[in-house]
Image (spheres, rainbow, N blue to C red):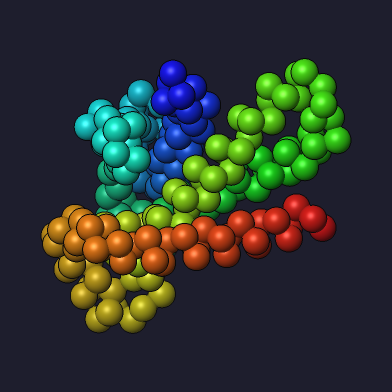
Length: 207
């Protein structure tokens, strides 16, 4: 029963976080001239086209999973270099998660004075998962490890030689990422980054 209640509370936040993350990737790619996400039906806030069912099952059972990556063809970008375009597309996903976390924190702050009301007692618990799920998604995807968004963001900053080296690692990316997860190297970086992002957004909300 406890697992069921936790799932009912956290599942909407997970679906929102994953869906908006992938939608943001597709939207920015579309705005840059690539019609691939639109043709594949990814410019939607319907969660179903964005769900990788194996990744979703892993997420429910093992608390680690993934969505279906948005396919992007940088050769279709217009008036922008492929490297810069990919950096912007990659930034869009974590950026969207941070926006959702920020808005959720602001909404939570406004609701706190009404926490004794019955309606607020129902709504407030829904915002807490939205904050943490989106912070975790943003922080995890900002890690500069292929095939995560952070590697493409870093590649957009580095000189071409460094960017090409990062892109060459993508074929080994899942193996590298799995190794970092198993050894808990990801966790040692992820949680401090989550706390840092939370602190920054908390300062913004407090202004």
